[in-house]
Length: 356
Ligand code: AMP
Image (cartoon, rainbow, N blue to C red; front, side):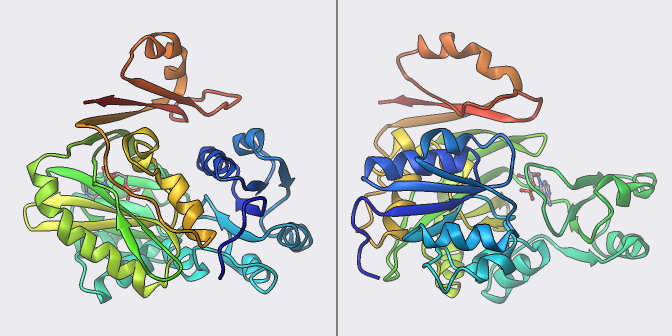
């Protein structure tokens, strides 16, 4: 595809903070964004000149949206694939829907990565409640039950540390197909975030070390330390093999555990990622801008880190109340997402501190 000229319209499926930051990056390059999202606290709509509030399977609304856009992307990996397929004949959609399909299914994504030579934790599928004991027995206790579909930020998960935890676990995870995944002993978590252009060029940002609390990302830090640095190249090779096999266009994230045996793949996100928010100020080109560049057919920007040390902290629940203290720190860059309600566990912003 020839480069989309500034002034063109980019459609974004999903109305959360990732869409908001994509729309801000797109506006800087002279594009207009049109958000498509179901009713809710759609904070991306605050910064986009167009939006459609409709369900993701409303075909008439999707087609009208597609006719109004020059390219369509998504910021949310649980958008249903089948209705989206119907708009691919009206407008280019990046990343490709196959990536969305693979990422929506925890079992399929692990199998996809394994087929390309990647390592994952041991896992076993339970399609219904009666399969759960056998799946747990196959991987052993301790393990984690994770729903195959629709899980994010630790939701749809249950830790099994004793036989007695099995009782009621099916209901606790939402009574739907799941995997039992062996508990991994790891020393650090990190992600590979890359951008792939329409002609197959790949660029990587430095991998930050990611700390999760309660299944939710709390901080991303750079430098990531010797352990992550020593595993980054192998993880990059694995992530780029997956992105290339999917003929991917845009920003792609793969999360890893740094284990004694090397990088162990955890999951992919076919989109910009929370562990890449530091790139807004900490890299020459942010993940958001490079995603827009890739889907619009523009040259990719440099992904070089521009500070000696970078720390990104998520602001969760009522953490945003500290905004004045944060702003008093000259190292801090504050991002608040404009959410109407600061519920516990809800990401309402982030702060990135740069040190040179
Ligand atoms: P996920 O939704 O798979 O990204 O899981 C959320 C977080 O739970 C991860 O970032 C880890 O901190 C933790 N976790 C997930 N799977 C495992 C595992 N197999 N072993 C140990 N910790 C895990």
